[in-house]
Length: 311
Image: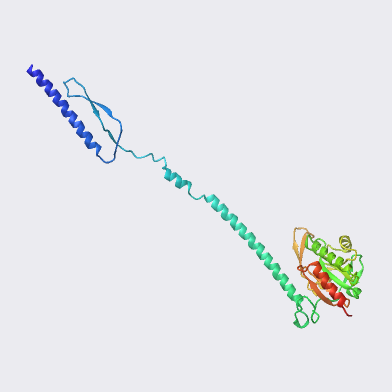
């Protein structure tokens, strides 16, 4: 009996010792670095020493596990936001190319506009210089060296000289029938001037409109006749050989230059100065009018010249 009690006491003492060891081990693990607390208990079964034949259930209130690193294949939300906020190089390059193309286009337009303005200013400066270099500012002071004798062919095929128009006020314009926009606009302004002067008996039918072509290769007499008949019944068209047209254009300080538009010889336009010239009945240049002058202003000035003229 005493031996049996001693065996039971030893068994209980051994179980209590194992329980104390497990509890102490749990406390030390609880404070270790890199461990986290799990809020539920995990049952653990501990076997006693061999020979006892008894299982002792022990509950652990804490189980600590080390936190493992995250999957490197998965991105953190911060990394995803940084990737989304990165620059879109395709958009940037496309915008850069568009901006460069637009800048080049605007620069070309600016250059062409500046060149035309400079050429127009140079031509006006030549017109404004009279005999002895005296400035006339569009109106004759000391008679500028503009105009002169010419011999051309009218729309009926008749040889025509400048002396044939003596005793009449000539209103000349230099252009060409294939002109797409400038010449039709200027002819409309010419017709408005004629209509305004014809309303006054003092100036009625006193102004003779003359269209001088700067494109003699295409503007023959028949072409001029067909083209000018739609504008005004008194409008006279003049053409001639290339040398004759060059001579009369030079005398009136008219600038013109061909601009090829295709491979065929007749595929071209002509860049030219835009000006009206008023010549008095004595054949002397009186005044010129540019694109800035309105038909009303031209008609008013021409009427003053007609009424104040003394042979």
